[in-house]
Image (cartoon, rainbow, N blue to C red; front, side, top):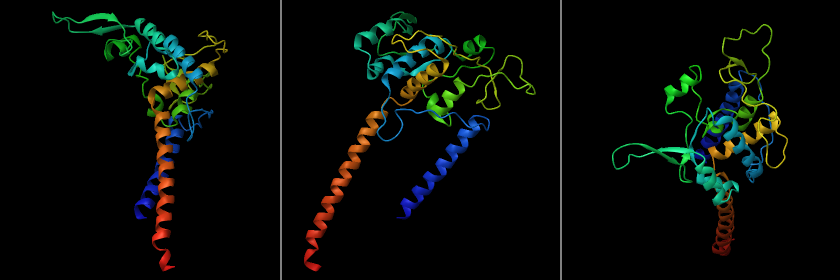
Amino acid sequence: MLKFVKSLSAAAVLSVMTLSGAAAAGGGVELKSATWNHTGMFGTYDRAAAQRGLQVYREVCAGCHGLGLVAMRTLQDLGFTEDEVKALSKEYTVMDGPDGEGEMFERPGKPSDKFPSPFANENAARASNGGAYPLDLSLIVKARPGFENYLYSLLTGYVDAPADFKLNEGMNYNAYFEGHQIAMPSPLSEDAVEYADGTPATVDQMAKDVTVFLAWAAEPKLEERKHMGLRVILFLLIMTGLFYAVKKKVWSDLH
C-alpha cells in the first residue's frame, strides 16, 4: 500500500512538472491544443496524416533536419508497401564502407538504412545555418514539454514581433518559443507541398501532419505497447476473478 501511495505521489509530481514545463517551453505562453488520434488508451496513429507528414518532412524539413534514428523500412508500419519503401530509399545517397581498399563510398539507400543527415557533421550544419545547429527530429516530440502541442504551436507560432520587442539580427519571432527568438525562419508556407490525396496544404494542416509523423517516429511501437497493456489488464482482471472464486470456495466452510 505504501509503495502504491509513493508511486501515486510521484506520478502527481511528474504531471505537475510536465504541465509547468509545457508553459515554460512557450516562454510562459499557453500552448495551442489540438486533438491527436494516437493519444489516449485506445488511440492509434492517423496513417493518412502521418503519410502526409512524411511528405512535409521530406520536402520541407529534411533540407536541414535529420531523422537519424528512423529506419526507412519501418515506413511499412504507416501503410507504405515494400516496393514503395524500396523506391523511396533509393532516392537517398548513403555513405558506406570501408570497401576492400579501406575507402568510404556512396551508394543508393536501402530500406534497412536510417534517414541520412543532410550534413556531414555538426560543424558543416552550423556553417550552413549561421551558427545554429538544426536538431535531429527523431525524438523531438518526446524531447519537449508539451509534446505534440509544443511542436504544433511552434510551427504555427511565427508572427510579427510586437512593436516594443527587441528582435536580434538574424532571429525570427515565435510566440511559443522560449524567449520568442528563434534562428529557424518559418519553415511552412501556404501550399508549400502538394498533397497527393488532395488535402489543402495550409500551414495549420501541414503542421498537424508533420507533428503526427514525428510523433510516430519518436514512438513507432506505441500501438503495440497499448495493445499489450490492454491484454495484460484483461489477464489481470480474469486472474483476479479466478483467485476470488477460489478464495470463496476454499473458505466457504468457515463462513
